[in-house]
Image (cartoon, rainbow, N blue to C red; front, side, top):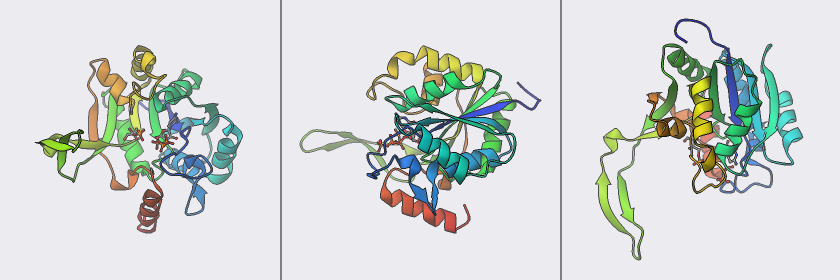
Length: 243
Ligand SMILES: Nc1ccn([C@@H]2O[C@H](COP(=O)(O)OP(=O)(O)OP(=O)(O)O)[C@@H](O)[C@H]2O)c(=O)n1
Ligand SMILES: C[C@](O)(CO)[C@H](O)COP(=O)(O)O
């Protein structure tokens, strides 16, 4: 992998329902400054100049809408192939479905959330470069700013201890992987995907479960996840500030 320009593909997850967001349409179709989250996320992946194929996971019944939102809402430039597949019951299952539909020639795979539309093309470039430099799995993360406590969730809940936050990070996407490593990690963890209670919340978790190192690089505040309506207002602020 080291020292050459790899073929890079991306799985863009957009198959969530957005329960916590609470909109009538899937969250990926919700507009941020007039454009669907999934279109902005796809455009920023493409703007990195690294990605030649994007497979988008869509909720059942929304494949055409998601495809149209990306094709008409995003300027992907030349040479980026986009296709849409149905997602699964969990994010892990959706990524597995996306991965299965990628052309097998990709050497590096990025997994990114449509719910994180404001990632910078520079961060995408840094992630790919770090894989090319020899790391099999690379994730962006930001420091945790709150005091974190472990809580015994009884009645009443009681603080058990204060965790040393110096060692904690909030993890973002895109996450970048050598393609064969990501496929192996998903195969090994496949049994977990069918239930939200056992599924991993990010793909690096599957690589960790294989016992392989996951390299961490600095993330970006603007790559925040849009989970609630309030988050959308914050994302709009980041956009206005030039993100
Ligand atoms: N079965 C699923 C669940 C989630 N996702 C995607 O994974 C990302 C992170 O999920 P989250 O933001 O938590 O989205 P939702 O699952 O839609 O939110 P909620 O938990 O509020 O329903 C999103 O881009 C979402 O579309 C997916 O592709 N397939
Ligand atoms: C992948 C992710 O965005 C990294 O922070 C996150 O884990 C998505 O999972 P969630 O279901 O929204 O908690």
